[in-house]
Length: 179
Image (cartoon, rainbow, N blue to C red; front, side, top):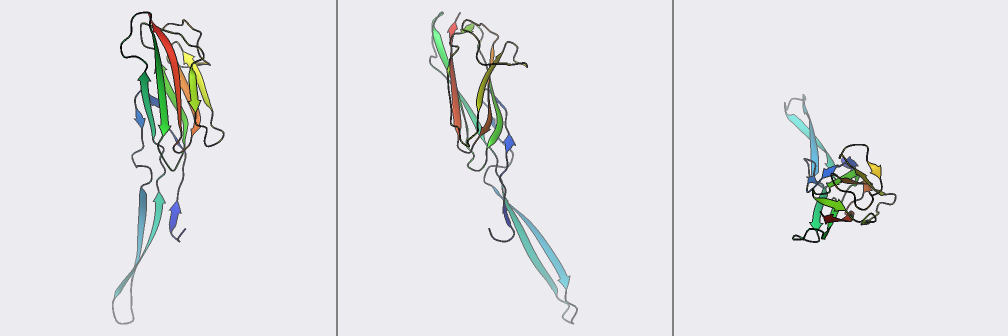
């Protein structure tokens, strides 16, 4: 790197709830330049001021986690099944998001039907882990794993990822029946 230039990569914490985007004030990839000047006066009779400048650059590395929720049906009969899928990604090309938490509430008048569910995690950087848990209140403590089939609301699901690398993504789906 040229003298006076510094690239910074940093990890940041992001926590999300339904249909939100967590984003810092300064966008990913923005170049910040810091300027400094030194001014002095020549005293050999010319009386001239001389100014020198120096710069230092910092590239902002900000995770940008986006969340999307879809459903298998927008119209369904009582007793019918609906699958909900949540996908999230870190669109930053420069840095990872850490301790990402996705929380979803089972809609009223539904009961959980699929204790296995489906989940996929694009595990890069290596070492990233996605864990599932649930709660009847939406607050701690959350119980590890998924609830048993037939559990009615209120029911809250939480998926956590310890690290979500640049341009990485994950998704999870679960099925519930209308009661």
